[in-house]
Image (cartoon, rainbow, N blue to C red; front, top):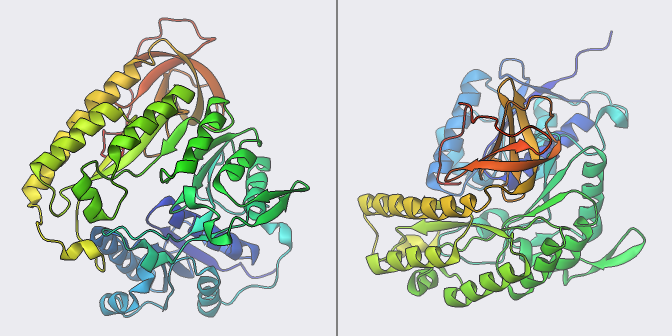
Amino acid sequence: MPPAPPKIGFVSLGCPKALVDSERIITRLRAEGYELSASYQGADAVVVNTCGFLNSAKEESLEAIGEALAENGRVIVTGCLGVEAERIRARHPGVLAITGPHQYEAVVAEVHKAVPRPHDPFLDLVPPQGCRLTPRHYAYLKISEGCNNSCSFCIIPALRGQLKSRPLSEVMLEAERLVAAGVKELLVISQDTSAYGLDLRYAQSEWRGEAHESRFIPLAEALGSLGVWVRLHYVYPYPHVDQVLPLMAEGRVLAYLDIPFQHAAPNVLKAMRRPGNQGRTLERIANWREICPDLAIRSTFIVGFPGETEEDFTRLLDWLGEAKLSRVGCFKYEDVDGAAANALSGQVPEEVKQERYDRLMRHQQAISASLLASRLGRTIEVIVDEVDGEGAIARSHWDAPEIDGAVYLNGETEVKPGDLVKVKVEETDEYDLWARPIAQPAGTARASRRKPPATLAR
């Protein structure tokens, strides 16, 4: 009887981009015959994929490494915090190896050293779409690594390097494999999605017998031809982004834009090294909505940035009142080791940051409640994420998984995760919708059911 294959535990921290890195590493390990362990005790070694953006995230990563060492003892560290190897070894000298972000081959090589690989397996041990950590009906599709921007509060270019795009043909082949495996929603991610292909000089590559430029709009058009939901994340509002709105109006791409505006006051944006003409941005948003009235825009903002005055913050609130964004996340500024913003004067006291955070969230809740109330009585399409004895939890075109709101289908237990369902909206609040399938009789009461708490990221 052949020996049992070695098992690897995996802890994945950080953003969806890091999650995709984890999926790639796991796919390679599974292709070589390794199995995954659901517990520390059952693993021959543990890989911890870390986050190294905020100081709080670094501390969380260091704690996760310590837990893995305590529970298992054989730990390989990778990810963004891996660039600070000395810091990791000072805290945890017992780790077996440390590699940096998107160093897939190096991670696998360290696993080989720690746990010798088994005999070469047949290729069909791993499904064509690879191993993923998301539910079967949606998947993140990473189109590039790194970033060419120099925001003063961010160290992503130092952690993950300059922009490095994947050729369009490579992205589309992965997308096709995912769709063939049953994926109903592709979530396009990168550090700067609308800059896609700039580093390649928009070089052409062949897909389905035709040459296509590796450029934002051709990629959106190609993905929009696959017949699944396509959701665009981390889109900087460069001028050519305007061209994607007709695709959204036609239903080829979801009417959803994730744009990190970060602030609205010109002097704060200048200190952040971000584009500063938010008045022009409001005009563009209005034009986008003329083309695609159902457009949902989500964004993130930083309050308490060094030098932010009460006047600056009030300007941000006024801008939000005009922009009427569908989903808003808010973060209180904190220093990041190595970021230029650390040296800025005018640090804002923590109690002021908290007070501004609370005010912004209350302000945005009222905006969100009004926008969602306008959906009342409408028939919309949703995708089911979860089903239990109480009913189903789904999402609309305007909701990304885990960060946005939900659509609750109380008592609807016959659907399955991944099902696309037409529903009529019967109730709304600041974040979520309650609805019933249009084939279901009216009058279903809103039942008590679990619901995620209202968080900053919604």
